[in-house]
Amino acid sequence: MTKTIQKFFESRPESVGHARTFTTEALTGWGLLDRGEDVRLCVSELATNAVLHGTDPGRGFLVKLDADDGVVRLEVHDSRRRRPHPRRPGDTDTAGRGLLLVTALADGWGVEDRTPFGKIVWSCFKAPGGVTA
Image 1 (cartoon, rainbow, N blue to C red):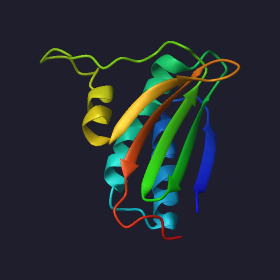
Image 2 (image 1 turned 45 degrees about the vertical axis):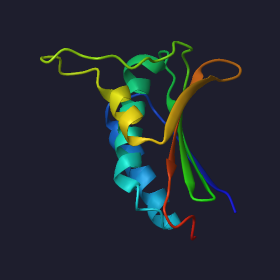
Image 3 (image 1 turned 90 degrees about the vertical axis):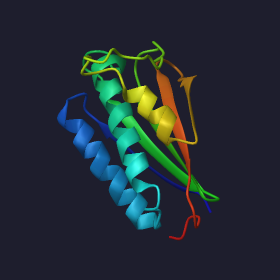
Image 4 (image 1 turned 90 degrees about the horizontal axis):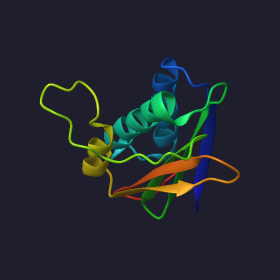
């Protein structure tokens, strides 16, 4: 059985922490904590990108989680179509590693257009033991 939960967040820096808490509570309720830290780190990175680069003024972002057949799919919906691309930051750069972390931690990720505007950045995680709740 597919489990789905979503929540809208304002485009503010503190919303990143709220998105992490929301994600942790959903994964805990579903009994899917084996990959919890990976999913939490990825939601942090994708939500941060939404706040910094993905939302038009006055708009927020949506975090959606689906769990089915031992796979958790994390989506972050925002209002801009500009697609993110992983890049290799320099040794002294203090930012720019988010998508590299998502690439390393997730079993897959990508970007889709969203209708009527914006995009969805998603990542998938194979969850040992499957969905229990």
